Length: 541
Length: 44
Image (cartoon, rainbow over all chains, first blue to last red):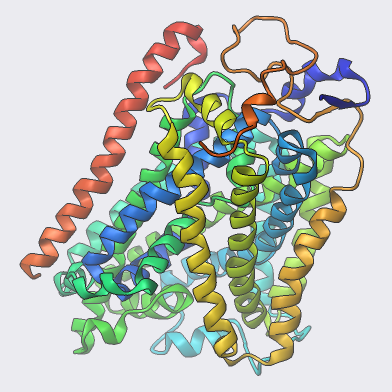
């Protein structure tokens, strides 16, 4: 049964009020911009190297095809069919599931707060690259002179060198968000994604020309087939695909809701999924070619210099830049790519929150941007421009990723598949204009294979965190900023779901005019047809 | 580079970048049909 909170006469204006991408190309670039983030550049190469090198390709591709792309298509179907932010889409799917959407919104808010800090570091390092400001000791420079990190404790001692670029990052992001879906997010993606790809191709070419690059590539691609017998390697592949594709925490639901109704969401999903992996492969080649050079220059083996994450970006790469010919160019390309990849991901994360606020309350774009962006920016500046910023960031990032994103994605997938039993209806929606068509295989992958893959990743992570304190941080820090935070987010989500929707919001079922099979200029119906709900019954078939 | 590493690198490139090329080609082909159906609103 359909429920409309308030006047039904507001329905025809909803699409116009929410805004949307002007074309499929803009949507695809925005989705690629969201998926391609810092993790593609600094996480994938090391995960691949650590988990069998060339042999890792097999579980990686299997994870992409059996879990990553099917899950991506699920998010697309939910958002595109229900044409709302994550909470609104879930509310339209089934009222009782709205809290899942707010849980995802909460996770995105937390991620935005700390993700901006890493972009700010990369921005600063882009300029440090010009004069090799880190000197002979990149590690000491990063933790000491730059971050001024002391003992592990939460402080209010501000580091101006982080505060200023962080404020600039937030200013830029707020301007983009205030401009709206097409003029802000769309145009930013349209310009920056090609720039990112060109910059990284230039970096890879430069890295491949360095002496020792071959040894680096050999370390990355030489297959260790015995690794395939280890469950942790398969879990690493599923985890990498999952974290890299930005699925399961509201981003792709939100972006898909901005796509016109007669679009090929399956084909778009395949392009986005393979683009994301294509960029990861490019990053792996560039990073390990550079590491090979560094190993040769220092007379070491590649395994002695290989690293990932912050260590790769802010310690290993500065060392490479210092020693490489035309190192400043390499540095600008590398850190510039990090900034662009980070910004396009950050705007997708913050859009999840802004979109939800706009859908729930009767607010304009600018008001919602300020209502979300200013508190996020202030929190970000207070927490991460201090001498304890890196510790707080490390703990929050670890727990929000492992037990925030992973759990909400798993729960959402199970609820949609097995509780709401929405897969047949969502598959039918994708098939109206989508090619290749999705069928029983997609439903099986989405309801069984992908959840099992994620569950294994989750169990292994939980086992590690219960066996030993993460990075030996103090227990109180892990309790407050880790466990308490990940428990609070779902509670907050289901509390927010109790707030009333703005007047005129259509709930329970896809909104009028959302049927992609309907003629373009057909008059919108005032309520969903009886076919809308029954399609959602019957479980994953 | 060892032969095995070269082979795996080439396989990775062919599968992932080849998969991307196929996905783009498929979308463009299907997009052309959609363009005729909906007129000038389509741009890909």
